[in-house]
Image: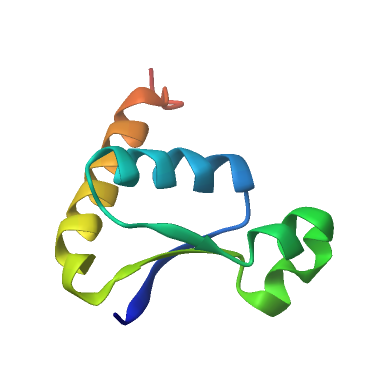
Length: 82
């Protein structure tokens, strides 16, 4: 089974939230480089952040779910215009 990186985050909390939502939806998702970035955040740019990886055949569904999560987050954050 080949795993593919679908997103990368600098914040381990947000990475875990997205990971949990993917796993709850039945997607075999995992975090890569989480421990290294958590222990030494200055390495995050060199490593490319904490990466969410999923099996290649689950990429379209995972990407769709993450887009829904990101859209919901944008709607929940108040804008300066209000």
